[in-house]
Length: 512
Image (cartoon, rainbow, N blue to C red; front, side, top):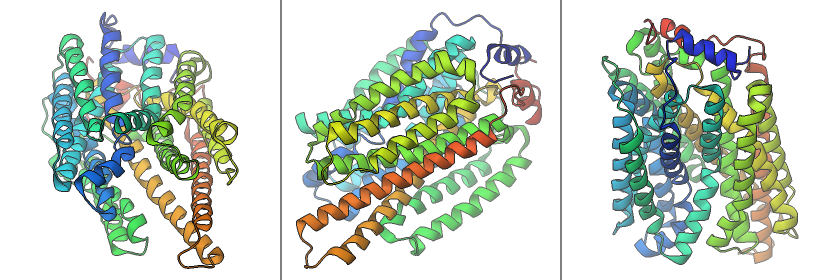
């Protein structure tokens, strides 16, 4: 039986004793959680489009500029598992509010930054509180919506935001930078956070955390391993793959993450990440899909932005508007997928098909040349990619959190943004390095003057962008094949029901 089918979800809920009537305030909870999720996701890209203005204002170098983005990614990616486990131990409502307040405070600090160090520090603090907020938001959603049809609707909204947040960040960042100032790309979070705090205070139920100790050793190994992984890949483009600043942290991350897995196998019920949460085949396939989607998606946003601004001469605001049709298609596809297609077809079909369609969109973008225009060449690729992401992401997120013991909802939810963040870091690093190599190779063989003629430089940049789009399409294609093989057949019964996960983690499930 498909894990997305009503009967399987009903039996899972019954096995865990979670047959309580639906929360009357659940749709207000969804609105609150969606607002917080949007704030966290769009902050990955909203600052990117404002970087040139911030650099001119604060006077930092091109080499330093990347740290405004990297500081957020490092803190966010390395602390997500810890943030997810804290929401299980302390309570989801409490950690949700702490994450909101901390994120808003860090945003205000960054917006008021008077120097480079202050801005980077604020971005790191943003990432740390984002790592507390993101898993809390998803775990609130997971434990609030228990009726299969309503759960599909809720995850359609949440998955649509997860997929479209990066593009929304570009749109909003372009508008704020062009019409106000780059500082408002950070100040705007105060508006999001204030509304979400009001909603959380009014509609979220207080939840009691687990009476267990935090796995400190696991937190150090897991957080350190993810930090080293994201840092190593972030250094690949500026330093090169042969640099010890690249492969050194990557080697350290392998050692730490292996140690983390060994620790989790021995930690029993107090593990930071109970391994049955990720070893279930359907959830594992969903996490792999989110990883692949993150790698392809963030690369597409990055090089799509480059292409629109450097090749077509778009302003930041116009660049953001250019992504708006993709957002609309993605949101529409997300609702169609979760409300109509997922209950009938299951994730084994929808997720690989969605990834393949998104990859096709990138293939279309890989055909761009010097005579391409937005409406005739760029827009079709964006629309196809949006349809694919809207199909794959909600189904993946819903499957990734389905059948998990409620006491593990926080840490299971943390794996979702962790996979997306690691995928984004890896994809951006690999695609950046590939693009730089292609541009250098083109200049070596075609430049006849020093410095190269502007037309040659422009064509070198175009060659690098299209190579990145083709490589991103390959990532989506590999993800489609792997997930098609790993997902269970539609008739299989999920092994990761709340009861089975609870027993595998060394204790009876909640409500048993």
